[in-house]
Length: 89
Image (cartoon, rainbow, N blue to C red):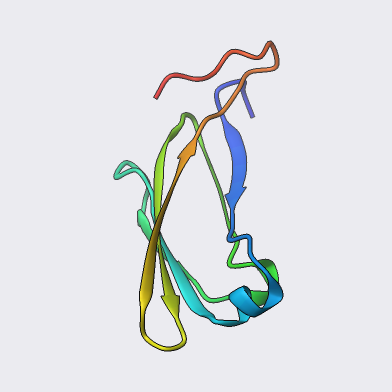
């Protein structure tokens, strides 16, 4: 890969009980991604989404709980070059 491509992951942190209460997580990526809405149901990985890209953006997540309720989350993905400078979105 060249210097403008990163492999990255995002997942849910929580107590074992909190993670057990989650049915799935729906991540919404930047619209330039193929299939920008991704649903993860793998509790063992903490609902980890592993992918890659060339720049930072806001990742939106919707946590679907076993009781049917949802929790919206967001995370600002910032990627850095080896010299410590951030990529531009």
